[in-house]
Length: 429
Figure 1 (tube, rainbow, N blue to C red):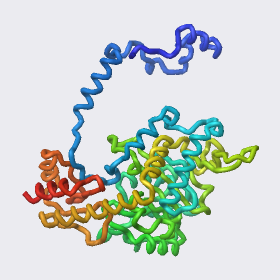
Figure 2: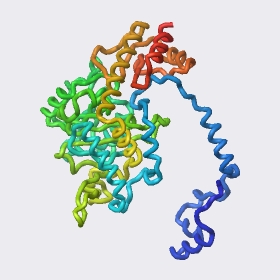
Figure 3: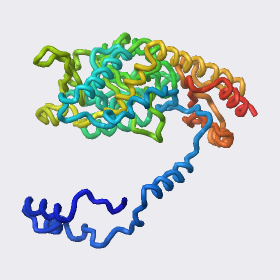
């Protein structure tokens, strides 16, 4: 397998001749000699398919699989109905990309259109795009939608996910924008540092510490300063809390991993984006629209593309050149399988189980740090987080994430009462 080459030596010679080169060395003549590889790479011999499968299984066996998971912090373990994998693993769907000759692939376009529709229903917003790479990129791209030639300041809540903040800083650095991080008070965003010199405000709901923010009040304050409001939202929480639209948010973004995608050691994940109709033409990436063909039949097309591949570069608001098509399809199938009632039931279980766990841990000696209400995550104080988590690890329990001399715990519908009671006993012991 390691020696497989897709083109023969004769085909390579024909291509070189057609391109006007006499040899491969001639093709790379502009590359400095000291950068060229003159000796063969020190690689092992190729393996057969059987040998490769065995080696991969041995490598996979080195992974530690936890019986109980109580860690979230942006990636969550939920139950995934069997129908999800059954549908998305069909050969005609297994692609991470949307087709270039899009209109002849009506099935794929319709699946994306349905995804956009469901994201709008979940967030209450007017329009959604065909997804971006992940939730952090969605946040940064949303901020890019708000750029102004006159204002170079961006406000970000200090209670957002640290990784999201890093991506936002990278985008803003490249655009010459200043990122002003607002302080956190009692686990919530402190808006006292807002002014009208910025373009937008990005907040997270619930925030990184699990606390439910007063998103409606935040939007009103930010709009009073002339700022565009961007909310990074958790999809299940939207089934219980007021939607971003109801809170006056202009752009809603988030990580779509909880919608049918396993943890997968970090990816691939899915960034969803939705906005008001006013901002529709600034949405990055791809948008699938519904129309009629020449014979009056329902049809789907790619439309309103603001990326630089399709419009003048100086007018483009983004250079996002792809979307997470297979992940978006997974989210669509998951949402369809769960339905509104199923999503709400799962959200209620996340909420109730997290509160049960918080009460139990407090009785075991871990006091909850913030009094504010939370959805499925919360922070407890802990004298030695690493020691406690190592103790849990020995019992096959993945505990919460160490944060600021405390632990960020998470519970979802997948955590049983028996699992939570076992965790509480270990903490109390």
